[in-house]
Image 1 (cartoon, helix red, strand yellow):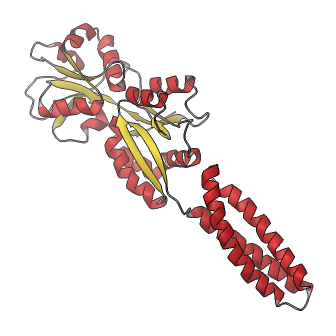
Image 2 (cartoon, rainbow, N blue to C red):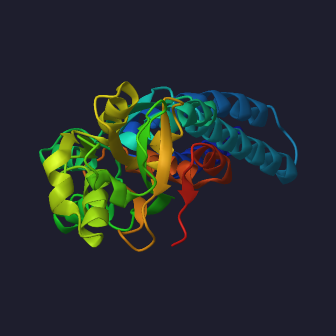
Image 3 (cartoon, rainbow, N blue to C red):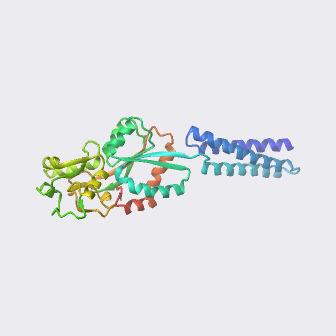
Length: 319
């Protein structure tokens, strides 16, 4: 009778542990680590439950109770291990430069929920980040400041199918330094003779520069503006130029202007003069931690994260 009870307990334990362990694994390597931890916990539970069962000398009801206790112990051990993996993982997030400040604040919130996931950021122009992914640089998540770069990566098969979506929206604005004496009230005014230099993002690789070109093209002033333009590697470079007075004015996102009291917003881009400013986000297909990357994107879409985005001037995507 004792041998029968031991056999049933151990069989139940192993079956329960196998299902729970496989369900908890995000990748084969992670699964191996977690499986080892679960096996040890299960072994302890088996020893205790089987010992209890072996002392039973009575009815079938006692046998069933012992088996149930073993199953519950295995379930608890597997759940605790899955929720708190022994080894940390790192997620590499390539994000548009305009997300620098807000992402740094959100990291603390994310790590409070997921202490075993380290977020490693690379902030730059979306075109430069696109190139990094195309060249095989390590990346788990990509957040662009325009659809162009994301669409290109999707066409190349470098984005995980079904993982992409629009996360945020923003506005294009014209700014000057806080102490500027220029009499600017509109985008049209930058063609005036007293404006000598305009800061813009690189047209080929920086979405803010691409949006700006569309604005000035729609106003019929791009040729004149291009002659005065100083092109930056990303939107934060343009912001710095305006802050320091290295350029007379610049075109950035509203969220960039909100990060400093050294600039003032002249105006927003005229309605319909450029595409809607959107931030698509997705899991990179080559990610070794696709499940964790998807979980991070879910966190960014949460109500608590959106409150932080809105504090920095971003708007939740409407589509």
